[in-house]
Image 1 (spheres, helix red, strand yellow):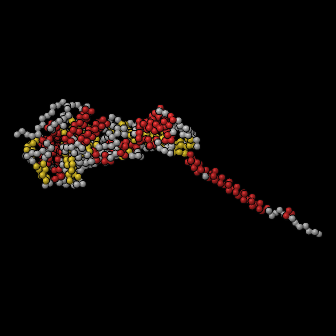
Image 2: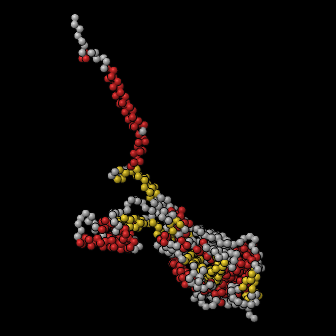
Image 3: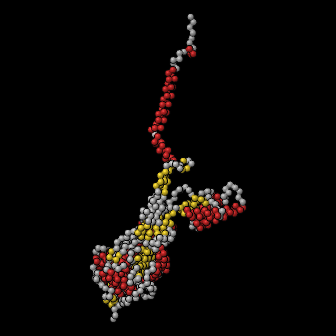
Length: 609
């Protein structure tokens, strides 16, 4: 029997089965894992994936709040904000007259050559500045994007585009890279009241003056808008959430723009004429304490702070204390008369000199021993007489009167940087008391502080804290009067009236016409004091001043002018007097204060022999 050798085809098929089974199992496992992942994606991670997808198509846009406006007492705009745009140029488009890849005719070339200059002139007209400022941006090489001007009002840009079209000019457009640029702050009056208003920085934050004082309430609160977009733009039916912006409050000041402008012009002329370092002036309503004008010179333009001298950005009328000089005698005499130490008609035996702190003090006018009425001490500005009489008064009582007049503390007007001045309150030395009495040393004040103190005398002895904020918009946007600080009595009405008569006597007996205001009885007082220089540790230069009230029979207005370091004169009458006269005349006429109907009284300063 022949045995047949088995071939590969004849072998049993049982052995390959396990391999196939393994492959089937592996395949099944792969599909199982895939199915599990699908379950995880569809069920377990569905929420997170949906959230990620929503984030990819959701846009959040800031809606900037508009900063509140600031107005004067007559609703003239002093500061406001407006939406702005950034203007860009396509220099290549301008340079080719719009024919980027086309041949240019001689006419095209001529038009293109003139285009930058013509566009620059239009920019000057609608945006401001000079043509020379814009030409570099309009002619810049190797670029099709050049910033021409920032923070341009949309209205002015619209007018510019219209003028461009009328002139067949092209090449300007808007920069749309920032969808919501911050509103620009405008000061339409330029330098007028700049030292009072302050300014805002590049981020719109108040810096100095009212802008800083009221920054929080002027700023408002930005809003937001959240919406969905697709590659084709905003989805009309997509979700949308809008939180409106809350604009800042508007404020109305007590300042009178017209009077403020005139006061600043008069002050600037006087500072220049006397070659002085600086000057300040204030006009107050003595019945209310309203600040009608608060002028400083030199000043600056808040629309262009970068070009300003930083020494001129502050408000000297409230930040720079000085020794007041003889203007201060009005406060001393009010205190002494109220305390019963002296009366205006008392005869005083005035020596030629008085000693204080081991040094002789004389009067600005030369005299020997002389008899004079007490009012004559004010009229002739006698340091000797004032010290003599003040020595009869308790030192603490005298200082307390000064405190009631608002010295040694801030006025409460709220403007940043305000100085409280200097007023000793404890253990006052005799020499300090002497210096305070005639305003030569021992006390320092600001222009506003001293003006408010003397206004209390003009107001029958009642002190009204000076204030600048008149009204503000409420939550409904309605302008409402703001509450003011309480008044208080300093001296009795009779004492105040006597001091007013002393001031009127000074106007009556003044040489020349420097204090006279046609049609009005007025009262004045001047001051001159030497300045202490810390560098040389010596007295160098003067501070001169003139204060006045009108009409004397029923004071309505007070004007105080201070000129610092004049080189053309050294007396309050000669240096500050002319500015006082001009500003007070303007104020009386502007507010329609009725001229005096009573005769000027006879107020002698020397008793008969």
